[in-house]
Image (tube, rainbow, N blue to C red; front, side, top):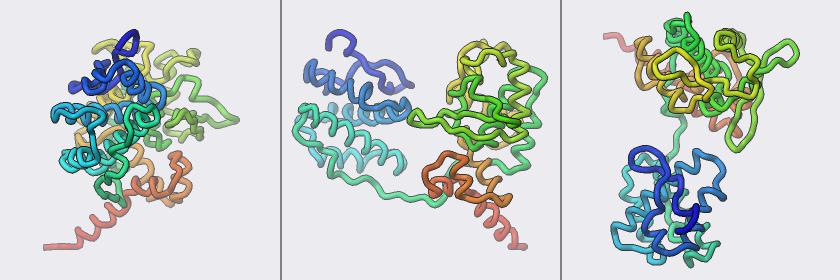
Length: 324
């Protein structure tokens, strides 16, 4: 390809980066390569979706390349064979199929290929009534927060980060995308403005504990007047000095893994655990599922229900009735 179209943000085998277009695409010439590139840069706005569908497209087209196929000779049976042998979990396979199907729809509209070979291919069936994300009990969550050394700004940052995810049911991406001005006073209460998927904002009042954690962190960081800058910031190497750069989801995960390890808790705990922990605790204490869905910015209570882990506790109580 010529100009700036010779590269695309796609997942590489070792992480993500700017990689050359797949050979099966680039050999078709400038027009096809440009159309392929535009699928990710023009058609998909969400960076997470772009990465996921990029991974799907890259892996599938690499698989086709190994079998001597071209874009024009890929047929439904090839897509079906790829999906059938895909080693991922059912939800991953369905996501990959969706990405492949959308890509070829885009190529059909652009008259690159005549038919979409993925259109009629069916993915694996899967249905979950309960999510798999590990949660913390109220006692473990309190032990985690209490275990953090908050004598310095990094400890205060980490406590505020995890506390906000628990008490606002927020996704990690919505929290790490916040600017200082997204924590603001509304009347007598403080609110947060969370950056949700699709460029949407979700605003809600802050729990008094999360408010305490945030106030403590912002004061220690000295960033109250830097309204347009990132709220949660990275550190300079192993120092306890904050940079002006915002944290990523990966940065947050490293914080979580380090903190749960120091607290002696399960290493299975992840960023998403705090959202599930907050929702479950809210429902345990008499909260309504419909309200929890609003607080979590879910469009359906079915989605919120996946985070409801109260049945785990009920089942454990019943199991403990076995006394031998």
